[in-house]
Length: 316
Image (cartoon, rainbow, N blue to C red):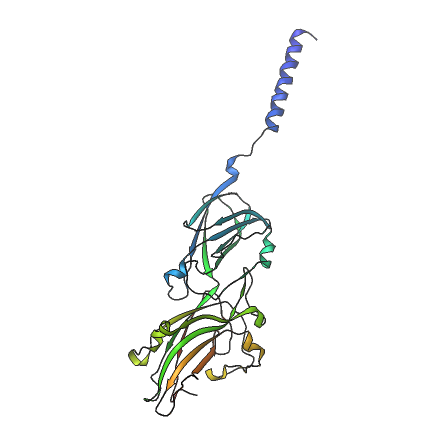
């Protein structure tokens, strides 16, 4: 081979080497990812919400890709409402936020969330806030995408007031305790919550005593008192065993298993009239909660408004 031919072969060989090197060292374009803006805010109850009901003290943010954890963020003393996260465009992700659990969630796979339970105390407003959840499933990522995670509470709010307008004139009722009975002691993070036995519940849940019951003992327009608020966790018990037509029928015998699993409100009342005084044996008004007369469900993030209307001597 002459010198010119050798030079031509050398040039071709060098071009092949360069071409091969470029292929091996190729780095995917940054355009394959997108910065996703994720915002977190607390939704409100169906009616009004107390400012403490919206408090986010701590937050778990979990992002799953193909059923596995892609990103896990734990923020204690949460003070920001937005995250900027790089995700692959065109891929599907599921995003979860859990607020006010007081701990970091440790899971590797999406299905593990089904097995996650937390032990809880009786719910009440506090600096640590009410546990909340938000979930967005199967989101397909695109450029400029924003995801808003609206948190909903595991708790329900129960507002109670008294209507004394139908009582006999000589009857006086003073509420000295208002509380929740059969409040769930454990919460499933992603499932529907339901008490299965008395071992699953807090027998005496959120309770108000003495001066905290003062609004119930005020007399306003039309005999209506002021309101107090109690909180309880979700407890989905379904329909009453048999159809009923009156409020007073929605009660259970003490030995009925449902008496140990269905959530109720109980008022302890000092009673006096011209003929009777309660002394140490106060009246107990108990009524079971639910979505209507024939139902026993207490649903998360809902606001139940109850007016207690005793009549006549207030004893029946």
